[in-house]
Structure formats: structure tokens, C-alpha cells
Image (cartoon, rainbow, N blue to C red; front, top):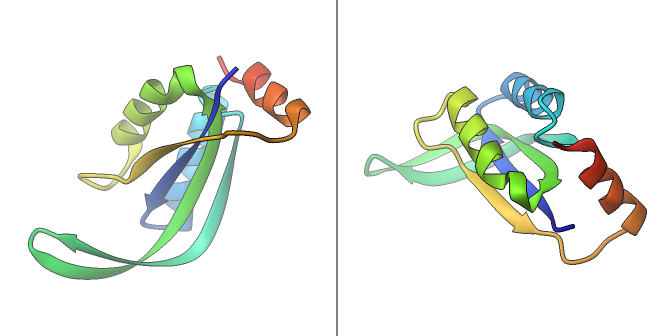
Length: 104
């Protein structure tokens, strides 16, 4: 079973909580972690921006990545949210099995 980590940036810890809870509740992710206090620099609409954000990291099966991306886009407050799928090449086999069992 191929597992992925989904890296998502959001505008606040509250939004991260709501999004993470939805993904786990809907069994699109086995777990989600929130990292608060991120500072981001990026270009948006031709201007250099700086923003306080939170990072949400969700763990899921590779087969669910398209559904996770679609759900994040539907729930996210940004026009163009950062949603990146990162391959998990290795890890605790028991944990990886658990991720696979806890997702649809």
C-alpha cells in the first residue's frame, strides 16, 4: 500500500482544525497534524506577500490523493490553496498499515 503525506497551508489554526477534522472524519486521511506559527513569503497577483499561516499535514493512501485535493479545494478559504502530495518511501510498517486501514 502506497502512503502519502499531504502538505497544506492555511490562513489560521482554526481553519487548519476544521480542515483536518473534516479530512479525518470523512476518512480521507488517517490523521492530521497542525503546525502553528508559520510565516510565508509568496507572490500573489503580482505583489510580494508575507502572511502568518498554519501548516496541516495529513496522512492518506495514494489512491485517495485526488479526493483529498478536491475536498481541500472545496473547503479552503484561499483561491489557490497549497496542497502538495509527498511520497512516503519508508516508515514504521505498523503505522503505514494503520494509515491504510483507517482510510476509505
